[in-house]
Length: 536
Image 1: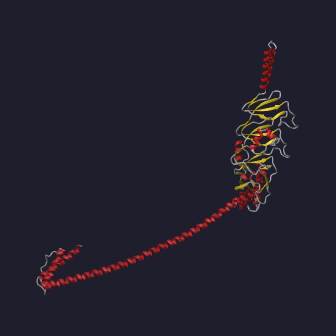
Image 2: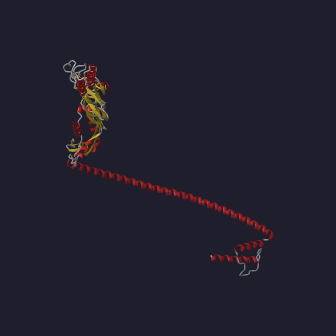
Image 3: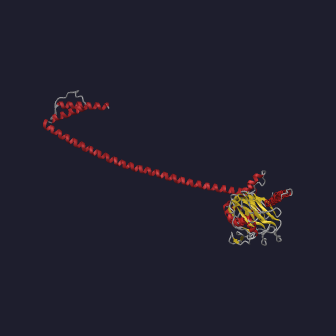
């Protein structure tokens, strides 16, 4: 565009100047020449105008009217000829003539979300000996350095080569002649895991740590030091320079290692991957007891890596799972075999919980040196029919005999208890009967006393009544005479007992003090009473 303006200006000025020679009037000729000069100046001025769009950056190169750059320099910082460190911001810019200057418009560096920019500088101070990345600076300082190349190359003391700092998502006006940017994804730490970083730049690590007191310390790095960093990244997304830092994802999920005789092959690869994700399966452990029995033992070991211990695991065993499994495999097998040497086969079978607790303590102590926490040791099947069949059958028969003996003893105890119970029940029944008899005797005695009292009362009543009646008879007899009083009493009895008074025999005569009628009535009464007794 600028060259076009210059060419157009030159052509127009030439055409105007040529036409001036065809005019006879000197004044007019002078005016035409002046116009041609103005057009030429305008064309030259317009050719120096450069425009940079809103999403672009202008890269400038000086072609003349300047001194050469020093050897090794790539960008000019003080007006030297060659690519300039400063770039043109969006907008219109003057005095960049085509012959003297080249302005190349480049797009801005646009880093999208979930991406980061890894920066490498083509110019700057050399890196320190032994370093492959520039020292890390604050994010604000790094942004100023990359967007102001002149500051990067001068006061900022930027280093040539890969930068440890990164560009986060956004737009940046960089000088592509100085910086190369490679975009990569952010580092994602999944759930139930942490990221252990190994710094590839910085000073020597100085942080010494121990997991077990009597173990050798592990040297870890702090921020700005080279080596495995003691601080880990928790689950989430992080803008990590994967060239300056090696990232190791360490699972913190509790994992189960099975030492079993199960199948090792899987027809479906997805099934195999799922099983490997949940744990690992190893060949069963074979042990030999003190009495010479050799048999397999199914063992399950549960372990996890605490986030704070993840750097120690990486420092001692690396980030891959295979070295960890190899260490755990050898430790578990050695401990189980050593523990079995001191017991007999039957004791090993019968004392499974003791073997579990002993093995847990020993395996935990050994693996703690590696930064691994053992959370459980479980023993499954012990031996099989081939290795312990005869011994187990003998033990089973012996146990059955013991149980039968125990059952017999329990039955004997039950019989004795039943006998004692029957005796106690009989004694209780006898005591009950004795108590009942004693109560009955007491009741009889009370009835006897009651009857005696009633008889005495009745006798006393009869006596009182007879006495009263005799006194009454005597009083009546004294008044009307004995014969008449007797007659009245006889008549009362006859009336009360409804006795017929018609005599069958009339007896006459009388004794002293008794009338004949009275005697006759008494005889009739006696006959009636005899008849009533026969009817009953």
